Length: 161
View 1 (cartoon, rainbow, N blue to C red):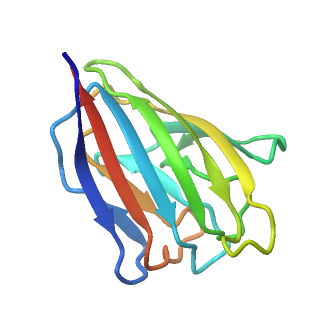
View 2: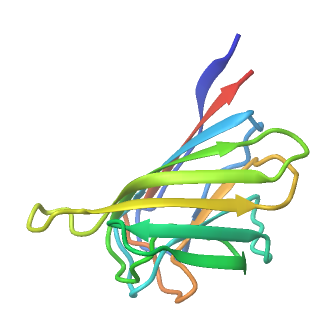
View 3: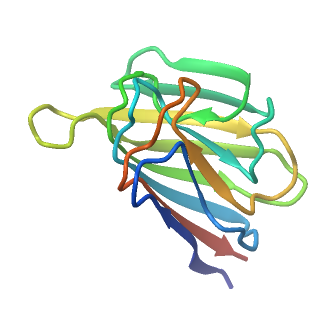
């Protein structure tokens, strides 16, 4: 019988370049909820795992059905294709079995959250190539640098079989 539980919660009380979770026991399936309050620079946030910022990632991400932005051999999975530092809300699903690479799919929204304009739809996919199981999650402000705004948060939920 499967069990689903909260594995990690992390948030920023003040702006910072990076946000990460504590180490957790690896589940077979991860659901990650991310709320990005915005960025200090025009950038796209990236997610990475187990503090690995080596060239072990590939991604494809599109906003509002535009042609996707892609990356190979990168240091994380970009979570936006538009480099405007907008707030985002995303849900990621990740298979986390032992001895396998990790497929990541995600969807959500990006853009101003004040109702003055319609949000942009975000859809993406990525791969983390190491075969070790994910035991922590990190988020940074992206390759341009800068900070993630206060209020940015990560919630990691795991399904154990």
